[in-house]
Amino acid sequence: MNLKKNEAEKPLPRRSRLHEILIALIKQQKDLELMDDNVQIFENPINNSEKHDPSKIVERNQRIIKKYQSLVRSAIALDALLESEDYNISDGRIS
Image 1 (cartoon, rainbow, N blue to C red):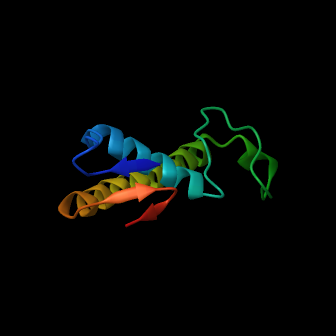
Image 2 (image 1 turned 135 degrees about the horizontal axis):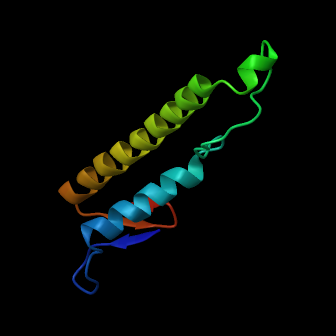
């Protein structure tokens, strides 16, 4: 990630900055799941009917969406903090 603010280089537009920050946050996640509309098997189901329970699929997808929303809100907050100060982000370091 290379976000710089100085007179020699124009800063990235806000949307691009947000995109870069969000990608960096996503890369830091170790257990980030993807949504699935047809999850067949859940880990350690109590019984066989739970394997194909649509409510479990909906609950899982809602949990995943909340995680992504949290990452987006974090990216927006970080961008606002960087915007309020002179910033230079390169190689994952803020200075």
